[in-house]
Length: 386
Image 1 (cartoon, one colour):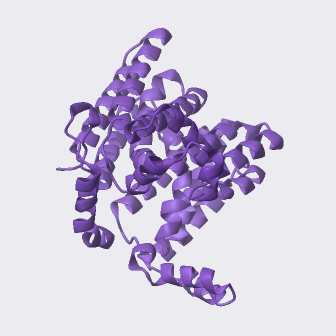
Image 2 (cartoon, rainbow, N blue to C red):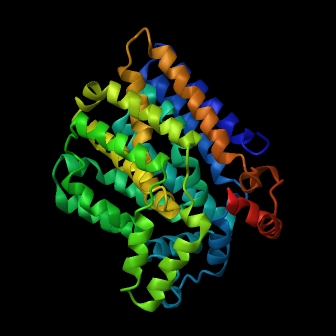
Image 3 (cartoon, rainbow, N blue to C red):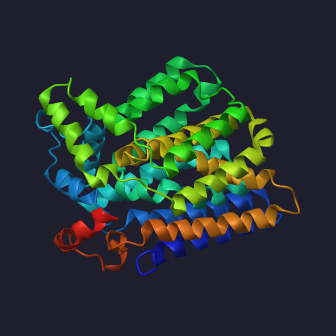
């Protein structure tokens, strides 16, 4: 718990706010003020963080060397067009990496607030935030800077799937693609994400996936290796390099993550009819189905889970509060407490590593770029084994 403690304390604080919201008959105005406190704490914690995880190794140098002349920047383009333009605008007003990081956090929290406000009742807002922190939210904020922007833009596009407005949806997804290449997976979702999946099909897919996952049946790697032989040499070598790397191809096995996803599937299927009675919730149920399927059927390719499946973790942010909302009155406290324990345990598992050691520019105790780089270099081999 040495490294995960600050994140657990943040989580417990927000869970405390969520308990207050759910347990007391507060006025709507009071609830909004309390939720605003959650936003402020989030900004202070993440907006002023030090060099945590690994993405800062790319973005610190990138922002430091970034030229505000668009022509110069685009000539040596290293990231997607939308992100470059976004970064140039920030650089015109803030020259330090700390400023760049803070503006990114403010941008993220604004988009996230819009999403939660549209999809959760005010009393479930803090709970949604707590779930978000654990289910990929902290990782997105800390270590997937471009990816997070793309996911948030996609989330703003979700209502257009239900409303069947293709122009608005595809416009937003194209903007998301300008921030991260993985947004390409969002394009086909317009055609099926709003359609209710039969519960039998959901269950059969889950059982088949569990068999493939637990017995570590490899079928993707041989296909990719065969496919790679027909591609240009440069692309072929890159694919084969990924395939030969234990870091990108290790199988996850029977882990806490598997246990948590199995339980989530049980709760979702148990409350399936109640949850899907709301058309908008079908988007999140199907998002979880995609996430679960990628996890079970593609576990042999770790990079698929880290870069593609991660885009669908948003389903948890709405589904767990919805499950608690739909639970019977006498079982609601038990279900809430159970999920709270899962959240705390998962936060510890995710963040208890030396690269996630928390420090803050606010307190003047943050390690320098060089110090953090030294820590990463010394622990790299051990980290990649995990």
